[in-house]
Length: 313
Ligand code: CP
Ligand code: NVA
Image 1 (cartoon, helix red, strand yellow):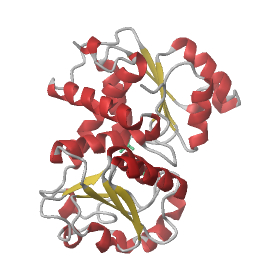
Image 2 (tube, rainbow, N blue to C red):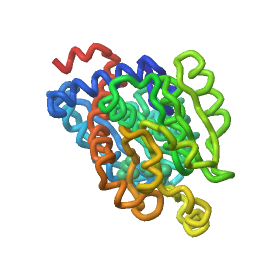
Image 3 (tube, rainbow, N blue to C red):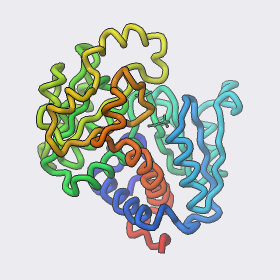
Image 4 (cartoon, rainbow, N blue to C red):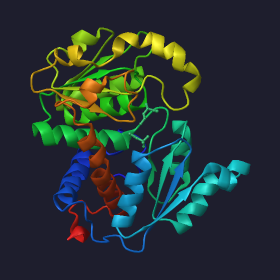
């Protein structure tokens, strides 16, 4: 099992499968993990807002019997110039794991370089691996087999899209991505996932035609047009992304059994209509709930390395 979760690639195919197996076990018991890691301590640092990630992690940490310690950069010495390396060295002496949501991916990677405890990426500008774990769990619950599935991603090719690309590479499903020109995902992440798809099946398709991406898809996924940190670009993005809204007419092009997914928070009326969010194909609340189980499984596996889940009983 990996030591850190920096991107979804940190886990790889086996790590993702092990996490999902443990998560499903935890879900089948109503989310209870019986204080399996009693006495542990987990730090959480959020440099950006969060509802789901923050609450699901704190609930997961408490459920495992550990103490959650929520931190903010402006309350740490890091805000006054203490280096990331020194912060990582010191926090490793107190904590069992550290969860961080921040801007640059390099900050998370630097923490991991100097920490002797697991570092968990709770979203950066470039990746959102925790989200992809819950997304894959939701797809598996719906379709059982991921092989052969076609997931359409409509919108911005940034953090959430990147983690879904890595998920497709490891789990062998097809991800058909449709972005406005200039908002494509990182080509190195795409190329690495395409190489994984050659081994595991599936593929990564890129394009700008939303209808072509969604036609026949088993699931349709979208994310906000302006991510956290891009607030100043909101108006421009609203213009550029106007043709990338998931509405009932677009969903009608997907397979009859298709489901709708969204990492949330949703900007209703922008990237998705109420009709789709609240419609019968929407699985967004189950997807959000699954964050709680995948986060528990992830903490358990990264802290203990026990892929059999023996301490869970
Ligand atoms: N999906 C997600 O990460 O939500 P939050 O920003 O509320 O944590
Ligand atoms: N792309 C979004 C995801 C939020 C969970 C953002 O970074 O704001």
